[in-house]
Image 1 (cartoon, rainbow, N blue to C red):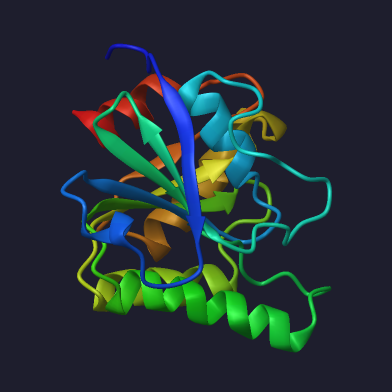
Image 2: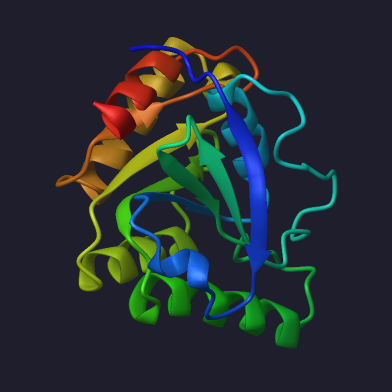
Length: 190
């Protein structure tokens, strides 16, 4: 798998936009607010600050489009399930995610459901998986922050994930070390 050569932020949207009608395929990244979505995308593209990450979860308030190698969009969806967000803000983010996945004109090639490797799948993650399935979207599951697990913990988590997401490919990844990057890029671009 060739490394990614170029990645650039194109725009953030909050609703219908001409970018959704483009023929360029989209790969959507979705996950809870504190799973390291921004860090993971930055790590995959090999750029430290492409996606702005924040120490405060729940900062992404738009659907952000990044053009990768002039041929695919990485789409960073707002995080979900962060308890400290106001109920109205959390609901607004949930509706935006659901709109993009269920009703927008997006040319969605694949979705990447990102979980915390230590915490495992939470109720919000299972609901998101159900939404992806009911919307007919192909998706993979990535357990991020895998560098925080030892071999025994990883084997235990792999069993849990296989039980919850038996019909989907599961990857362990570390945005910090890049371990697992080749396999994920191969799955996304192969």
